[in-house]
Image (cartoon, rainbow, N blue to C red; front, top):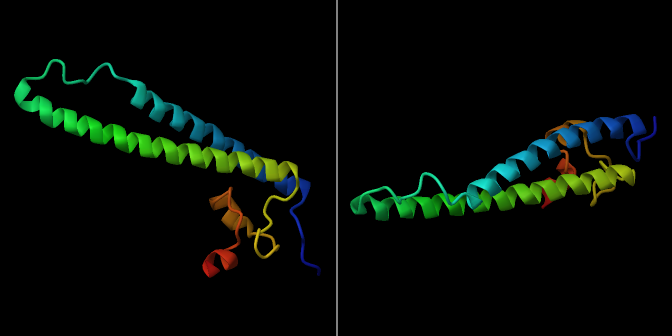
Amino acid sequence: MTDKTRYSDEELQEFKELILVKLDKARKDYELLKNSLDNSEGNDTQDTSPTFKVLEEGASVLSKEEAGRLAQRQFKFIQHLEAALIRIENKTYGVCRETGKLIQKERLRAVPHATLSIEAKNRQ
């Protein structure tokens, strides 16, 4: 039996569907995070007594910083998923960029934007 050098069109379609579902959810999550950053109304310190205002403003700043970091991370995840879709169209999806071997299906189902096999990842 010869080793496969790429996934079949049917297998690529399966991965594409998986990625599209994850991409849709990631975009929705990203929009929620962006909206939480843009939302300057509501739950603000305008109606709070001066004693607690400083504490609430500090917590608000930390919360916005964390939401900003999460939004950046989510945006990067979206970019990786979109790149995976391009690799599917080019029929290079699932091929390890270091070893040139196929990445295991189980790994791609868990991390659909993976570009390294477990073997190559462990070497890093």
